Amino acid sequence: MPVDNVGVAATSTIEVALGDRSYAVHIGSGVRHRLASVVARLGAERVAVVSARPAESTPETGVPTLFVPARDGEENKNLAWVEELCRKFAAFGLTRGDAVVSCGGGTTTDAVGLAAALYHRGVPVVHMPTSLLAQVDASTGGKTAVNLPAGKNLVGVYWQPSEVLCDTDYLRTLPAREWTNGYGEIARCHFIGAGDLRGLPLDEQIAASVRRKAEIVTADERDTGLRHLLNYGHTLGHALERATDFAIKHGEGVAIGTVFAGRLAHALGRIDEARMTEHLDVVSGYGLPTALPIGLAAETLIGLMRLDKKAVGGLAFVLDGPRGAELVRDVPAHVVVRTLAEMPVAALPV
Ligand SMILES: NC(=O)c1ccc[n+]([C@@H]2O[C@H](COP(=O)([O-])OP(=O)(O)OC[C@H]3O[C@@H](n4cnc5c(N)ncnc54)[C@H](O)[C@@H]3O)[C@@H](O)[C@H]2O)c1
Ligand SMILES: [Zn+2]
Image 1 (cartoon, protein in one colour):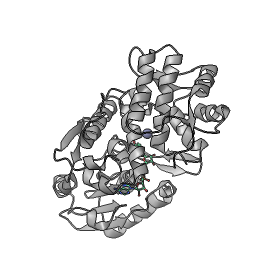
Image 2 (cartoon, protein in one colour):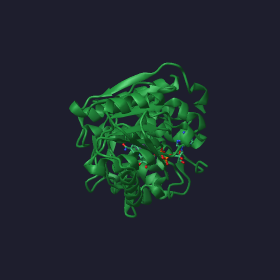
Image 3 (cartoon, protein in one colour):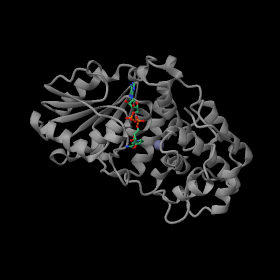
């Protein structure tokens, strides 16, 4: 795993240009220590830091600070946790002139972001993502949400952070499977305009992924068009997560879904064979899974893919083509079935 790449000295800053809600995303070793200057710029007199990481990895804030250990993971990403956070903010005396800081993976940045958006009808939030997935994806773009028993991310709002600090030093403790999870998102960036990031130092891979996401979010903050691109590889990816009861992790599903998207685009005559093979090369080049898990029925996957939020009744995929990647609706089911049948199969990743 690319842990050797962690901590390369350079840092990058990427602007997310959204008018008076614009903000910077800082990437690199040690950038979390900019927190005190961010808090000073915001004019906050106190902050609440909600962190899934050990308290000692929280940088100085420069003001009186409430430290709240976060309960992370999908099972805790719910409204009860958001209410509990808001109660803690109130008991601490956090006002709407103060700020909230999240520190953790995407479940933490999503839930804490929502709590910040709701508390006093919105207080500034600074994200300090600590998983690769949260650094390349979840912490930038302003989507916050929690889960309901009926589905993931069903309750949320758009609430842009005031600053994002992607400190690559946090990644030193990341388990191997969580690296895979993040690299699934980096791999799909190859096909949505981020360029070929293979072989680059980790912080450059993160920066390029964030830069592309920032461009897309700037053009389509509320997910009514271009932001679909971020779902490259996700139609099958989400179905694989659900069909395996989440034994397949999100990034693994996206990786397999990206290989599939290349095959499907080729089957529909949108790309040539070389470009289809590039999908396999890129995904396998990041050491990610490329085959469907053994024993999943095509009908099950198709049924789940019909539930995809991009599909309005039919089957919808973000697919490469002559004009680059775009959302393609009403893809014929028989082509999807045939392409699924042609995918290699392998045992579930463990
Ligand atoms: N808001 C968005 O735009 C957006 C985009 C993509 C994903 N998401 C959300 O992000 C979530 C997935 O994010 P995730 O994979 O980071 O989930 P997560 O928060 O559950 O973190 C994954 C695991 O990694 C651990 N971890 C995190 N940082 C660590 C570190 N530095 N060292 C050791 N362990 C660490 C966590 O404790 C957890 O066990 C999902 O809920 C998804 O819906 C949101
Ligand atoms: Zn994703």
